[in-house]
Amino acid sequence: MAKKYEIVYNYIRDYIDSNKFTKRNKIPSENFLCQKFHFSRETVRKALAKLEEEGWIQTRQGSGSFFNIPFALLNIEDSDKFKKKIGVIVQGQDVNANTSLIQGIKSVLTEDTVTLRVMLTDNKFANERKCLNSITTDYDGVIIDGVKASIMNPNMDCYTRLYQQDIRVIFYNNFYSGSDFPKIIHNEALCADRLFEILARNGHRNIAGIFVFDNYQGVEKYKGYIASVIKYGAVFEDKFVKWVISDDMADKKQLYKTLYKFLKTIPSCTAIVCANYMLLDILQHVIIGMGKKVPDDYSVVCFDYSGTDWQQIGITSSVHPGFQMGAELGKRMLQMIADPDYKKKDYSYVFEPVIYEGRSVKNLLNS
Image (cartoon, rainbow, N blue to C red; front, side, top):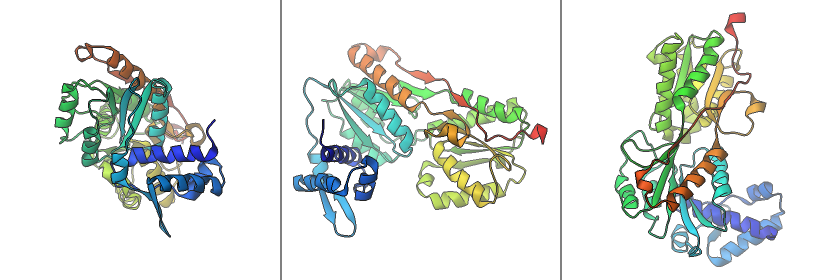
């Protein structure tokens, strides 16, 4: 059994490893670490002291502790030669989904057989390029959530290199159109249809949608939304659709203002389809800020609810299959590594939606 301070030490080392390609070099605070592990401040400080002694971090009085990015890049430890080495490149925006997904991957790619390197892009092309360039010939494979996958990607030369070097690549959630790599995705069209059917069944016709433009999933969700608008005879109006880009979600105050203004321009709207969990979080604050309630004033449904509290919160949504998706990625990656003819086969997989019908849809037919 690891000692308490070693648990904190290993957590921070993993944090450094995941963030070494970004500009995010401030490590979690002492208060956060104490609360997360329910350890004493003395235990946390012992771990921090060990990291500082080894050169991983530096503490700045009044500012916190930071890790040295060049030092982290130069001190990537060599894995056991007999283990498979696999990289996982995540966007990092949806913390809940990423945590569940990585747990799922680790349930299959266990530490005794695989060395797993988790890297973060912050959904930036430049960071993605750094991550891809760190995938060298000693890697067996890489699992990737594509960056801004609905627009042109400047890093396709990196993917070509991985393909030529016989490094297995599998995408999840977001992939690049025209590439031959396998992918594990959701059936967004069917998900949109099922969410929309619930709204239509309850008498809603003025249904708004909020979608992410530079995201493959966002575009597919929008396509499903439009098909459902037509299928169920809802009001077809451009003004009922709000597009945001993934970078907008980094500035929550500005996004709040944007969504507030959007809802003010469509007073006839009775229901809203939300593209993901992060947008839902902002939207709920906007509705409260307008002095309104869910579902009394707005019925709300959501794609990819990645929190663990979906039953308590009661938002009608598709439940994000984070852990199951991770396990499927791990399983298929091992199959690809074991298959010398993997390029001739398609290791893709499509998850069917799991819909939770909560308490967030008002029945207008009985009003």
